Image 1 (cartoon, rainbow, N blue to C red):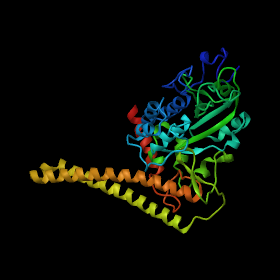
Image 2: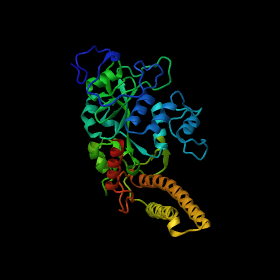
Image 3: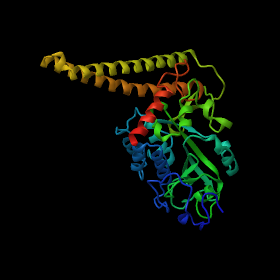
Image 4: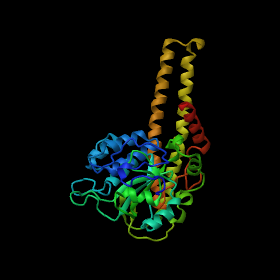
Length: 387
């Protein structure tokens, strides 16, 4: 008997997969349009509560041109100032739909992508042994006995793409999710095929103050927001993720993330340290400005509500309302600047250490954002509202 399947016919289309946590909003048991990458990743984002990113990836199905994908992801026009993602052919078409979807996720500003160390997942045995260390949502391209599932008439890489989250396989070819196991991976690859390992894989790492707390287990929330720590301290057990310190000439690689050709241990330069600390100071100042503008907005709001008691003239009320609108507008600009500075901070951190920081504190190597208590409080508020 296969774990999680019960005594059923092994035809993939007739499997009853249980225990199952979720129902997938997108599925096609035949995968007739060859959208396993878009469908599985869209379903993963849906189960993470990211319905907007889910809809964007859904809209990208059947599209491959970089300009169309950028417009779907951002609503803006693709131009020469936008960093060109790797994975494009000479006609600016994405060759790999998985990289296309990962680019959409990164453009959302809510996640960054961490590549798996493929030496740890190159065989079926190693994948099962190291799966226990993958606590974050993970996207996987599965190798099987048939390397190219649609090799006869398609340029799309044939490795079947599926996702895993909370020990559940999230697959476009299944109506429901089902338990992660070696036997189930064999069947995920397709009828009569055998799972041989991962061809590639990426985990999605949320930016803590932007994540939807109600969709994450509390234990992971606490770990993601743990102060004075970074990604590899918390998550890279048994070196399941790539970890290198880079110096030398830079070049583009997967999903627009940069690396360099020369590898060696090196102390960050004075210029890099100065740049990082300047960004940290700006980031903290922006947060301070945001709170001050909120206080101003609330002050003017109270003043308008109390206009009769304060015996304000019509002109004074109108002036107060204008000041309130001005504070709201300025605060919106500050929030946009916070997101931009956050991205610059993570890039600066990447250039210095080869890592992107997940947790945030006032330590000089990190930067201040919201405390874990604030995020937990939001989680409780969301749960109470849903009730």
